[in-house]
Image 1 (cartoon, one colour):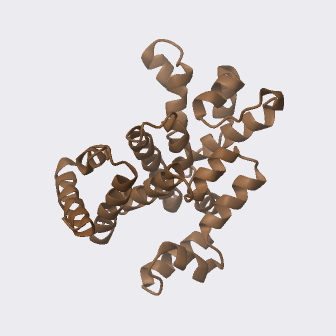
Image 2 (cartoon, one colour):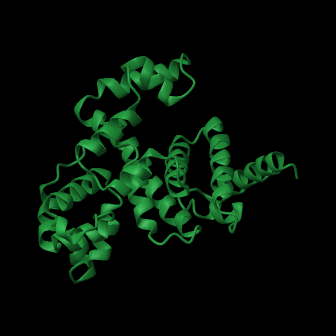
Image 3 (tube, helix red, strand yellow):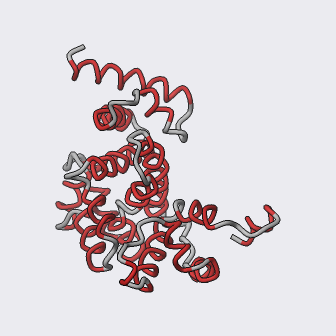
Length: 258
């Protein structure tokens, strides 16, 4: 953070600091937990975004929290992959949520960033478990990640995410979004998390799955086009976007009977 401030020549604003948080799911988790711990319940509202949490704590306290955060082990490839996936999910969520005229797209972005918290924590504290699940999936004995997790570890990592969210008393709105069902915003959170997984995997199979994610997102946002959704995947090269859009268009037409 100090390096960024030195390059800019002035202190970073709370909004700029919140952008940093949306690049780091573990930092975001610590920030929300600290904000909830210090929140006066007389305020009558929960802190559901990184910006609101920074404003609540103050820049100095946030800076101390940031400096006290542990650094990521570069050798932990699984952890780096999940972090990359979370960051992509947050970027996509903030963009796509605006297509629904969402009143607060950052809430959806924060939920998407934290959607794989369970797996993230396992890579930090018990890497043998997600490694076993990954091996199960690669072996072909399991067709989906959740199935591989259950068969290798005895539980679905999403269950761990939800359990942690409840134990840590994360804001109820974020818990609802993390469930990924019941409301359009929650469904969009789930779709963005899935899309991020498929973006990061970048295989022939995942590219087809990503086209399906686009179609599912399009159904939640009748006012936007598949092309607009693809444009929101800013991390993809233009050639891949064109190929993806063609697949999504074909899938959309087949499902709509057009």
